[in-house]
Amino acid sequence: MNTLNWSELTFGFIPTDYNVRCTYKDGRWGHLEVSSDPFISVHMAATSLHYGQEAFEGLKAFMGKDGKIRVFRPDENAKRLQHTCDGIMMPKLPEELFIEAVKKAVMMNKRFVPPYGTGASLYIRPLLIGTSPQVGVKPSNEYLFLIFVTPVGPYFKEGFKPTPMVILRQYDRAAPLGTGTYKVGGNYAAGLLPGEKAHAMGYSAVLYLDAKEKKYIDECGPANFFGIRENTYITPESTSILPSITNKSLMQLAQDMGMKVEKRRVPVEELSTFEEAGACGTAAVISPIERIDDLDANVSYSFSKNGEAGPVCTKLYHKLRAIQYGDEPDVYHWNLIVE
Ligand SMILES: Cc1ncc(COP(=O)(O)O)c(C=O)c1O
Image 1 (cartoon, rainbow, N blue to C red):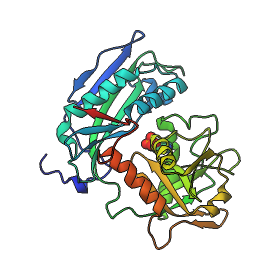
Image 2 (tube, protein in one colour):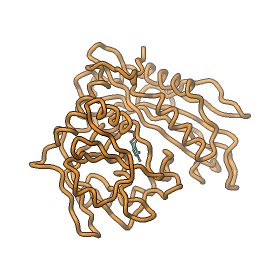
Image 3 (cartoon, rainbow, N blue to C red):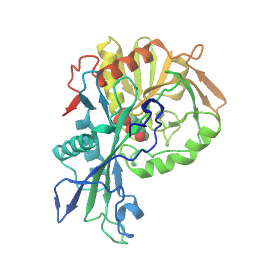
Image 4 (tube, protein in one colour):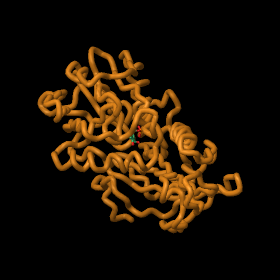
């Protein structure tokens, strides 16, 4: 354990001591249980395996200079999981149970919370799966909810640097009125092929357009998109993107900094008017975008001068990170302190 080099950790999986679990049976959620077994035993006919009845979440815990562990906005993840539950017919996990499970998973694995100053954090992964055996396509009667945690390294090892992204018009991640607003595994399966293609071509992510008209911006791989123009923070409104908790937080901070915030449909051509652009999510907070190549339209949009992140992206990034690590006042009470 003492051999873990916190700053060198990747976004991989490092085993930790415990996970917490809770089952749903006979129409009720049971009690939280703690397990040290990283394996789960699942029936081969479980609905999660065949019909994708599974949902997950992702959030982080940060060690502060004051020695306190802060979890960023877990109540929002609890609500988003409930939204996903409604979408794919799973019983809603009560918010209090979700929060209790997060606290327990962090406390039981306290020794894996990376020290302040390393830029690393503890990633928290809640998972909810249908477990009843059946071959008919219908919702499961029984479910397993679990949370595991794993330490992850700083996202930007070589500094906060912009990367290029690509529009691949022959692929969609999610359909309007489909499952895009839910955090279900199927959306990520749909993104694997375009994502790997983009990486092979040297891009960090795919920027998806709306699947129906291919006119408007949806989101960037596993992150929301935003553009900055004339002191305005502009982010897409869409029925096929995941409502990002980071984006919601950045919209608030942008407003507090005196910026105008617009959440609306964003036509792809509008990219040419942005002074800065970024992808936002739990993993990186903000991943500044260097340029976006629309390969089929043979157009390229550039946002970064001399390979550096723009001033607004940089300011927002440092502000949100400072709140998460407890370096700046948490005026909206976003952090849950786990003791
Ligand atoms: C598809 C998708 N969009 C956006 C996000 C960003 O959401 P959040 O800020 O809540 O991490 C994520 C990651 O969680 C994601 O998987």
